[in-house]
Length: 105
Image 1 (cartoon, rainbow, N blue to C red):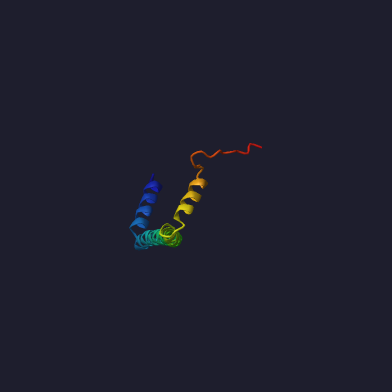
Image 2 (cartoon, one colour):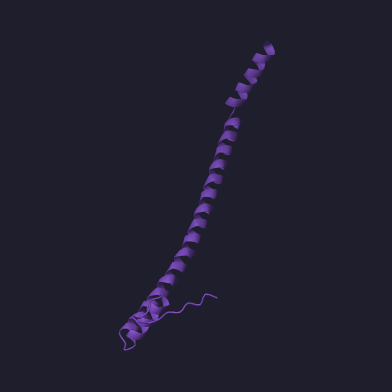
């Protein structure tokens, strides 16, 4: 019986001691540092991925602008009827009266 009370008193002394409080604060601080480091690395990874995606989208945008300029130039030229006919044929359209043969082999 006396030993149990003595053990409880020892535990209470350890809990109340300054070294125990410093240890708990140190562990909490270390946990906070680890959490902040993980968050920082995770955010840096996301930023890098999004920057790469933005660069790819900018390249696609520039390519589309060039393609648009080419199409505008063709549509403003004398060859626009030929271009329109070519694009229509690529999509499977035919002129009135044309006979279409399909290769089924």
